[in-house]
Structures are given as structure tokens and as C-alpha cells.
Length: 447
Image (cartoon, rainbow, N blue to C red; front, side, top):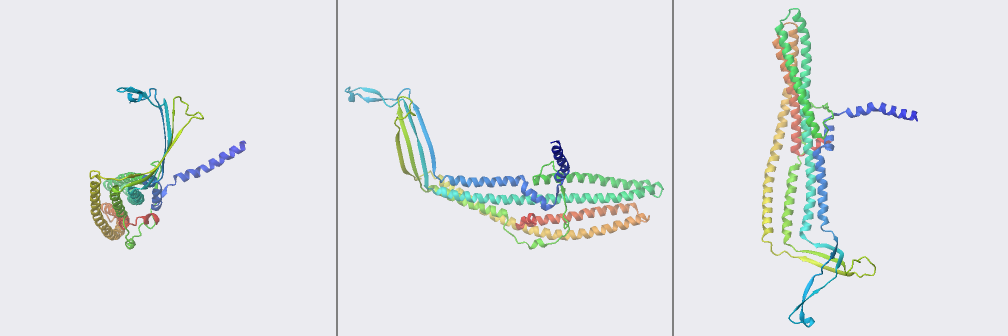
């Protein structure tokens, strides 16, 4: 028994490091971030619940057209029986009224009522509207997915931009560390002045201060990304940059433009408003239902309803119930007019939305092309800055160049590196904007 327990404990202990490793391994590519967000985003979970609620709404409307069955019962106790006055002529006492009590002390009734809707135009129109509403929530779920994809992607690239700036500063600080070591030896041997040495140190301290600020901003950006993804703040996350991130091309311009989700939503809203108008108009139609009732009643002077041999009297009713609207003070008329106005407003919204969508599409295409040119220019600028820095560093090491030239070259290199990666990520964000304008955001999650 001891050996069994000891063996079990050893298995648990030896497997613990692997479990811990699995928990802390939170490296995410863009694709993995989107997959996680589509499964865990709070907004998406709420949209799923909205969709389920819409399903139940359809079932609720459909249920009103199914048979309705109710049971009822009533028990009455009359400590004082109701009294009625009868004319005295029936008892040979003309000109008088005789008080008489009718009934029994206890009365009981019980039974069932059933009804079945045969014709109600509002019901059929309402059922159509409920189904359209279900489709509307499906579109809302798609829009929520697209919103999450867009926001997560933008936040992911924003964090990568901060990380690239951090990497550039760290690289430049390392270069300054090397120069500082050389200058320290030179200053100790009176080859350079202490002022020159301190200038370099001031520049380095400024870079380290900027680096700390960027790291704080990076952590905040990661936290925001975790919120978008539906991840707990307690989890750590590491973003993995794609190997082909800097492979820039305009192939996305060849994608076909699909109907944006916001246009589909407006079209569905228009359909629902048409059905709403029809539902109001259906209020002018008659309603026909089949009804039935089966009940039993008993009267007792003593409470013995459950004793055998005591009579219960049945009553059965079958029939049709017709309701014909005649006049409602023009209530439905004014509701219909309001509905017509809503439809006209939606038609105007559609015109405005079409123009807005076209504008966003054209702007996104132009932005992508311009961003491509900016990336190429910044890539060339970065290469030139690197070349200038390397030459300036050699000249300074040979005591031909000045410290000012070296620091200026370092600043130019750092700025060109940051500007380059900023333009690359700006291009990526422009790609996302164009995908959204094309109705193709799902490509990001499927790629």
C-alpha cells in the first residue's frame, strides 16, 4: 500500500513541471490570437447568447399558434346563503315580498379549457418577423466576429510596433555600451575630454529612459489585447512576429468586394420594418379560434365532495370564436403611417451607407498603395542610415570623426529603424482596413 501511494506521488511530482510549462506557454501568433479571441471573447459569447435568445423567441411566437390547454377549479363556501325576494302572490300573500335563500353551503367546479387558433393574420406575419429576427441575430454574430477580428489585429500590430521600437532602442543601447567602454579608456588616458564622455552617457541614459517608457506602454498594450481576446489579466502573453511580416505586396487588391456586413444588417432591418407594417395592417383582419370546455360541478350542504356516490354534474361546450375589428379610433392607421416613415428613413440610411462604404473602400485602396511606397522609402532610408552609422563609427574609432557626428548618426539610425517598422505595421493595418471594406475580414482568421 505504501509503495502504491509513493509511486502515485512520484508520478504526480514528475509530471508537475510539464503541467506548469503548459500553463505558462502563452506565445501567440496573430492567427492564434484570433482563434483564441473567436472562442473566448466576451462580446462573441454575448452574441451567441443573443442568437440563442432569438431562437427561443421564434419558438415563443410559434407556440401561440399551437393548442392551448388550461385547467381551472373553484371552491365556494357560503356561511350565509344569498337571499332573493319573491313576490308574495306565489304564496298567497299578495302585495308582499318573501325572502328566500337558494343554493347549498358548498359549491365546487373543476374542468379544462382548450383553444386552437384557426386564423390570425397577425400570427402568421409575426412568425415571419420572428424568423427574420433570427437571421438578424445571425448577422449580428458575424458583425461581432468581424469587430473582434479587426480590433485584435489592430491591437496585435500596435503591440508589435512597440516591441520593434524596444528592440531598436536595445540594439542602439548595446552599440553605445561598446562605444562607452572605448571612450572610458580614452578618457582615462586623456585622449578625449570628460565632457565628450559625459555627452555619450547622457544620450545613453535618455535612451534607457525612453526604453522603460516603451516597455510600460507595451505591457499596457498587451493587457488591452488580452481584454479583447477574452483572456484573464493573470495570464502572461508573448506575441510572435510572423517570419514574413516584412514581405510587402499589393495582392490583396485582387480580392473581390463582397457586401459588407453593415449593409446586410440594414437590409435585414428594412425587411423587418416591412413585416412590422404588415403586422399592423393584419390587425384589420378577423380572428377565428376553436374553443372547448369540459367542466364538472357539485353542490353540497356538507363538505363531502370526495366521498363515493355523491353526484358531480358534467358540462361540455364546443364552439368557434370569431373576433372582427370594426373601429379603433384610427390607432392602426397612425401606426402604419409611422411605419412608412421608418421605411423612408431606412431608405435614406441605405443611400448614405452605400456612399460611406464606397468612400471607405476607395480610401483603403489608396492608403494601401501609398503605404507601400512609404515602406519602400523607409527601407531605403534605414539601409542608408545603417551605412552612415557604420562609417561614422569607424571614423570616430580612427579619431577622424567627432562625437557629435557619431551621436547624430546613432539618432538617425534609431529613427530610421523605428520609422521603417512603423511603416511596415501601418501597411499591415491598411491591409486590415481594406479587408474590412472588401467584406473579407474572415481571411485573417482563415489564413
